[in-house]
Every structure is written in structure tokens, then in C-alpha cells.
Image 1 (cartoon, rainbow over the protein chains, first blue to last red):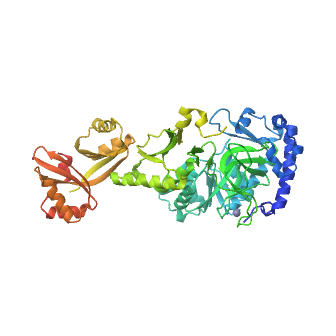
Image 2: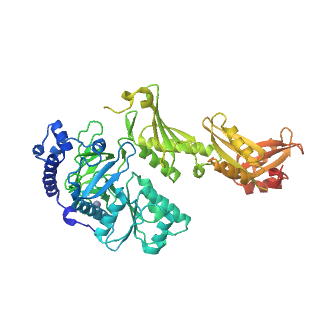
Length: 443
Length: 143
Ligand SMILES: [Zn+2]
């Protein structure tokens, strides 16, 4: 089922015409009402009148996360606060957080986007959606909440945590859709096993998962352990929140609500727009929002785009599931390597979430990739031969996925440093010792 | 007839095995037999102790990767050729030895060999049939 057939199945040329119209209107509006954008446009030497075709968007300057921080809290708002009905904020791991605002219309655009995502995941008015994303300044909880209500589903706003209760409500309420982060879904799956709840006796059929990058092998694990079909939903508060894109039943790329958010793929180093189908950094421009109309926002997420119509009938631009972050990308012996690729190999071998550390160093003139894998009980064998076999198997698989060889070191648990809740995955000694020019990133 | 053996994963760095043995000492666990298998990167310590459960708990509390495995201990005369003889018998019967290590019984003046077999029950049958004295668990743990 398609929530908004008119917009989601719009023929390509009509879609582009609509995008151009909305983009022109938005560029004019930000130029006239938001001084920070006006200044950036002037510095770059462009005005909204320079937009003749959609492709002219690339003449306009990017907006970075730092630009948003520099204008903390309301500097990039396009509407006066009296028209703003909602504020969200992303937690800042470094420096000031980013604050975003929504007018009543913006909240509606957001609910519309999530409604499309829920229909993409096979949901509808008959469903009971348990929203286990966090509620609050984070956009996950309220985003799914409003989308769920918009399609007429029954929304259970349980928020994150209290995992036993999550499972209990699956049973008691007959919940059909779970919405949360993929890692929390795994946590709930574990609790279901601990509580000996058989997923085949539940009504749970779909999980709408997002807000963090995850791999296909993690998807398989969640689908098997929970007995659901798991759909990838994409979004970020700087654009609107969850719902910017979502997978349909084909699970072949995420449908972007590109009548509201225009995607581009750029070379992360040069900022050049790349041809369709090439891998690079996702950039989004909001063309309908009032309070926070971000122009060419650099997401740092790595993906690629296709405009091929999908088998489901939707004609929107589709993005491939996020394969990494530009800030995580390592260039080792000239090859682009994402920690997520390594994680996914380890996950397949260990059949559980792996703990590992990637260490890149220079041996002579050659980059050396070392992967330290924690030996926990489930992969520990008390025979040297079997551990060496495991080491060889990881090395082989890594080489076939990355195309470069790696040294695999088996290490004791807890030797890999963990920051708050999350392991630090990469140590790049080339940049630490040899200065930035050998860091693999052209600047 | 079967003994509880503790296997510990450790990185091959100086002083690490001493640290692990120290954990057991502080927990009041006595070691009956110990063997280390290692490669350039990592090692496996195998232990037979008097209080296996206490040892497992102390090690796990320290976040150390441990595994309990079953082994058997066989008494053989402390003289040249005795080990070769038992290995011969096992080889002929097609029994696969994963690893073995030995220690001496101070009281009885005998050598005791700890074996880890792929098929422990089959090995037990052969050894008993051949007249070997397979030590029962409590005797070794409480030695
Ligand atoms: Zn589709």
C-alpha cells in the first residue's frame, strides 16, 4: 500500500518540475529572511536568481554541522518563534548541540514523511505500533509517534528502556510493529529469549529501525530472532527527523520523500556533485519546510542514489542503505575502507555483535591494517588449532570484502577501550605520528 | 572418571599468566596441574584445580574468557617408554588426542597424564579395557 500515491508515484519530469519550483521558492525565502544564508550566498557570489535548472543547486554553498552550531540556538530559523510550535535538538558529542524548529506545517510534513515510511513497511490503520525510540529532544520518538497517528494506527508511546515491559506489551497488546534503533531491537530480542517468549506466538510482523548505521547481517539477525521483517528508516534532525527515507517491501534502497528533501551525492573530499549511481556523501536540501529550511546540508553519510522506478510502483529517488560515515572512512593503501564493512564480516563469523578495534599504522611506506578481535566465550575454543583457524577465516573474509589484507589479532575481552556505552573502533596511527599530510585525506 | 579442566584465553604478553595465577591465589584456589599452549600472539592456559567453581567465578569476575572442558587423567609408570606405549594403543584404536600434558604424583611416585580427546567416552572404554588406571575426579582435584 502506498500512503500518498499522487506524490510517491509522480512521473519523473513532473517530479523535477515540482522540485525546481519549490527549490526556487525556498532559496528566495532563506535569502530574504535568514541573514546567515544571505551572507554565505553573497560570499559565494550566487543569488536565488541563478537557479534556472535543478542542476544549478550545486552552485550554492553547503551547510555543515558547524554552521548549525555557530548559529546556536535560533540563528538559522526561517520563522519567528511565535510560529514555531516545536523544538528538537540533537545531542552534541562535541561542542554545542544543534537546535531545530518546526512550524505547525513543518510538523505536518514530518508526520506525512513518516506516514509514507509506515506504509512502506507494510503498516496501516490496523496496526499497533510500539514506539521504543527515545521521546524528548531526540526526534526518534515523536517522529514515529506523529506518523503513526497520521496513518490511524494505534500508537504505544513506551519510549526506550524497560526492556521486559517492551516484551510484555508485545504479548498483552498484540503489537504488530516495533519502531526503535537496530541495536535496541537486538537487545529486546535477547530479552525475549531470556523470558522464553516464542516470537511465532506474537503478532509482531515488522520492525522500523533507524537512527544509527547498521549492516545487512544485523538485519538478518534481527529478522530471525524476532520473526519480523526489518525495514531501514533514515532521517536526521537537521533535515526533519526520521522519515526522510524508508525501505519498501522490496528492501532495495530507501524511498526518499524527494518532493520535500532533494538529495545529492557529492565527493566527500572535493564537494563535486557525482553522477547518479556513484558512491559518495549524501547532501540534502529541504524545499518545503518553514522554520528550519536547511540548504545543501552535508550529512557525512555515505550512500548512492538511483532514480530507477522501484518494483513497488513508487518513482521517488532511492538511496542505498548507509554504508558508512565520511568521518569514519579510512583510506588504506588507496582503498576506501569503512569500519561497518569489517563489523559486518565479524558479525557473520561470530554470529553476535563483535567487539573489535581497527588499528592502521605505517610499516615502512606501506599502510598496515590490523584488526583486534576480542575473544569472548562464544568464540573461544580451548584448542590452539581452532583459534588459529578462526584467525585465518577472519583474514580471508576481510580480504575478500575489502580487497586488502589485514593482520588479525585475537585479544582478551575488555582490552578494547570503551567510551560511554560505545566502543572506539578506530585508531589511525598514521595521522597521530606522521602529521595530517599522510592522513589519507586530501584537503 | 572425567575431570573438570579450566581453559583460559590470554594474550601473549609478559606477566599476564602470573596475573591470572594471582587471581586464583587470592580466591584461595589451589592448582593441581597446569599447562600452557601458546603461539606468537596468544596462549591458552589449562588448569586442574581443587575448587573449580570458585576458580571459574573469580576469573569471570575479572572479565577473563574461560571455558570448562572435560579431560581424563591416566596413571602410568614413571619410566621411559610408558607414554609412548599408551599413545600407541590409542593410535591403533583410532582415538584422536587433542592435547595432553603430564605431572608427577609425589606420593605414589607415578606419572599422571591429562588427556583431552575428541571422543572421551570411546577413549575411556579403550583405556579401561587395556588395564590403565583412569583416576577419578575427586582424587585429582583433592590431591
Ligand atoms: Zn519500493
